[in-house]
Length: 368
Image (cartoon, rainbow, N blue to C red):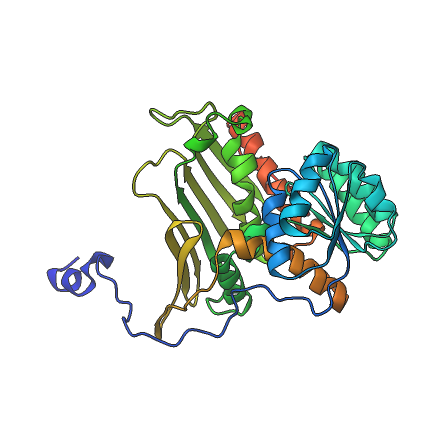
């Protein structure tokens, strides 16, 4: 290459992007609210239920009953959030209560499965805690049951309603960056708090527990394009305190789209979470020191737009999961966080786990 041509191109080392600031598209980053919320019952008053009930109180939802096998826990949640709700140690009472139209079911998957089935058979709409099921076939059966009864079955994949992910998802759906080429997540945070908790016994803590949100976000961004092939690996980080591997990486293909994830859960200083979605017309970015502190930007040939985000993941995410289900009931449509699409997220996640265990690329079926 001649000196003249090398100077003019600079071998691509200098960006040619315009620095002009453009107006941000008018996209909402906060979840819609139902206009006439139906009576809700909560099954399971464990740790995660605090965030559910706090969100429902903020939304002024109508939580009328709380069930937990240890009655004192149900009473504590009632007293803190919904003093007028009745409590019981038998979840079947909520299933059989004709007054309740929606059940939020939070226990662990193996316990939750018969609860969801019973709730659907009783004609209740259901919000299931994530992960939805452990076995894809069980999930298919529950989805078919809900559809046969014209009921809404949704999953609390609350990351979809985090303000930054919600804004990016809407921008993709609006076609602002054109056809997707790549989706990239870089997660660098400190997960050492899990070292002396039950989470320390989960070998695939990153992929199967924490990472399930990013598998689901990727599926949401893909908008129906199925994931075809997945490769993943995990390893221990130097001087990490916990038992599970604190390093994980995933590379996947969804038709022409590449998906990449890099996770380091042993970053003690300078934590950062970054997302980058590239299309043929532009690029979307999200970044910040933590999941509740994020900024987003849109880059196109016209310039850069940086919208102001309101809210944060742990508030709006939990609000959005239930609010979206209730809005879908009101409007008689499929919720964004519907269980059938979540099965694609689970299949993606489980393929990554199999790949990490075997060291091989895992191929998913066309409907996976």
